[in-house]
Image (tube, rainbow, N blue to C red; front, side, top):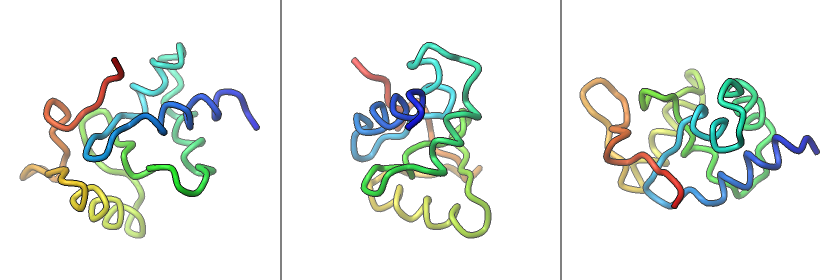
Length: 99
């Protein structure tokens, strides 16, 4: 498998319940700050069992279109992640940064 994708999945395994991380944050953590889209491609082949729903846009918005966006929101809300009036996650409150 693509080593970059493996790195994405390694970071994703660390994101705790009730927290989110942006595509760009993952790219920066992997030393390639301009690779947010590649992180998105990794999410398309995310192994089963990883918390793919915890990866959001940098402003806390959700992706996934009509099919996955409501499902992603439901999964996050079940973890206690709250959405503001703008339908975005408060990244200051629910965003995750590794130690």
